[in-house]
Image (cartoon, rainbow, N blue to C red):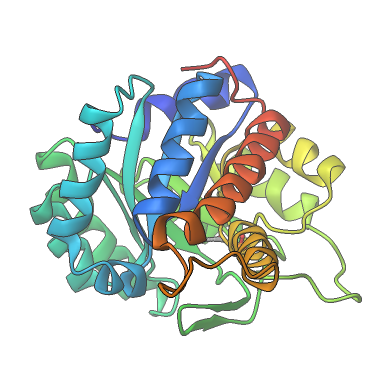
Length: 287
Ligand code: 13P
């Protein structure tokens, strides 16, 4: 059964570890991530961007696929299905379709409008027992067409949004989606500490988990980060393994590639990436 992410993240924050959010794109990715979480006895959050939701055929398809895998693959660890960087309208669509968690990315609105919309969505999500994440200070880089400059959040704005009753908060601390440029200055722990001071026990979220050095990840967790989002790294490992398989030319006589065999190495590569992250984040055996 899907669960909201609130309890797993409160436990993570209290226990000084973080739960990984791994973005999904299809059945193979989802199955690989769930199998790894089960094998490592770790809670997990499946992230779905609006683009990925559309690609998979719609939010009801995603809910049906994830619930079916949980049942048929005997997944017993806590799993949250979470809309990643949702717009106002799509948060409502996911709440209606059966997601157990949503992120409202109102960071591009003026703070007053972000507050107003977040307040309304908090009520709608909580009425159905769904958790809700909000964002202050945009995360840099490009993800599914959403481009941000990577600013640092204003701790007072974080407090204003936290006070609306969101369950966890993504605060920009110099993190960006995708690969970090060579001249990246690193995470702003000063900002993170200031946000943490203003928001108390609220679990904080670190987006752009790909390519952040392990020592920075650990320090971020020490300072209150309880959820870390990873997408690009799964994509890179999936692509490398698939390319290798194709280049090895293992196609069937006169039939082209067996589609199941074609996607298997990529799925194995995702399992390895997810395992490495769960170990680094400290969520193993925390289900
Ligand atoms: P990366 O693609 O950098 O891992 O970031 C993922 C993310 O933050 C999803 O919201």
